[in-house]
Length: 416
Image 1 (cartoon, helix red, strand yellow):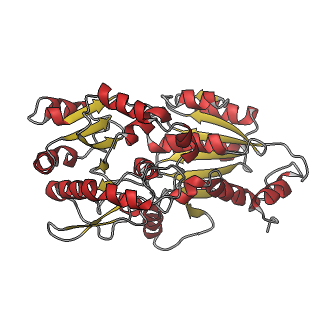
Image 2 (tube, rainbow, N blue to C red):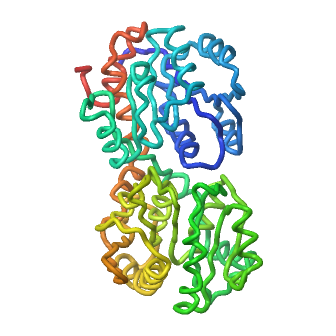
């Protein structure tokens, strides 16, 4: 393989908060092969708690605060050849202007979009070389919105990668789990369900509160461990009848803290009134072999039923949701014991799935919840392989003569 200079890649996003897309960006940075890619990170609005993770990887992170001129200057100075733009997919005038300016400054610049919500931005489409959507549901939504005029060479599905390797390094000991539970006033006999997410009222579902009265009747010693909740809902819970059944913990971007959270649960119970375009925490719960219950939102984003592999798309009500949690909590430990007697983080294990039926009947099955976990076990292979194949399809973009052959050798292609 000819020696060649690394390709300069800029991961561009609005902020670096706790959301799944920001976590995915960190994973792209962490697992990109440094022999072939020199990674840079920039935000065009604000920073956030993920900045530290990026700096700890030895990667430069710059916050531009809506300053397009400085962003363009940075792209030129760093000789950026690929911009990987993590965005909602909606038409946003500021983002459209950024794309226009980037392409105007360097027509050979490759722009890869990760389209978080599967929206079709007709005005920006011609400026984007490849669009990655993060679920098959989103791909279908874009296809429908484009009325079937669809270029499969420029639109692909690429699940968010789950960082199995990092979690494997941060598996808590039983003593650490016990200490974590004690710190949060969780007793050994308590049955613990949990939800992890941003404290965004738009993402929150009151189903998470409404289901608890039903759960208390089924499981008197129920505890609901919640990392991040909207302040209005937190106040509602803490002044209500069931306040002793809720435990709120502060958000954290540290894998050790997230591993402790998932390791302390019996069931992961997640609900959102606007659904999920992917659902990173669902995949992470599956990695820890926790059974998962979700609600279905067929009129909104609904990829949670793709990730958890529902057989029916129902809008869950509190009594159904609570019954599903109860049955999973009752039946899953025996299922897990029969499989391997414990929890392992090898990325290929299958979790439980929750399947809705009709009326008040809930059926449960334990098979094939997270087919995508195979991807987690193979990091950085799947998403990086696609990234490289994208480059192989653009042989005229790079001046360095050894780049294309080097990439071809890396992914087992000959450049065709």
